[in-house]
Image (tube, rainbow, N blue to C red; front, side):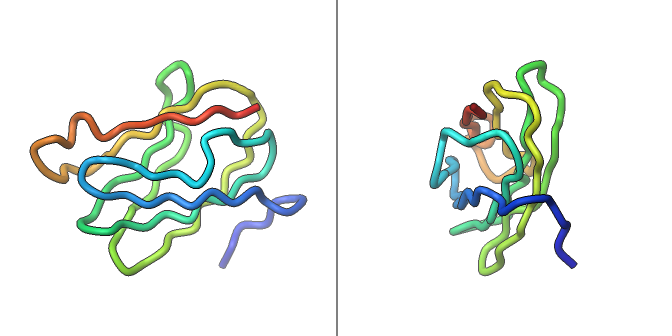
Length: 101
C-alpha cells in the first residue's frame, strides 16, 4: 500500500553503488517527495538526516528492487544521505547531500 500525500510528489531516483549515491535531483521543492531507491551492487541503508543531524527517514537500497519512500518536506535546508548498512571498506565515506527549497 502506498502512502497518500496531497498533491503529486516530486520524484527523485536514487541509485546506490559502492561507495556513492547517484540522485536524479539535488535541489528538491518543499512538499511531497517520492524517493525511488535501488542499488547496482549490494544492500545499502538509505538514511536521510536534517541539518541538525536528526534522522528523518530510512529505507533499504537493494539490487533488482525499487523501494518507494514518501517524505513531506516542510522545512527548507540541506539534508544529508548516509549509508546505514556496512557495505565495504569505504562505507564511512558513502554520503551525499541535497537541498530542499
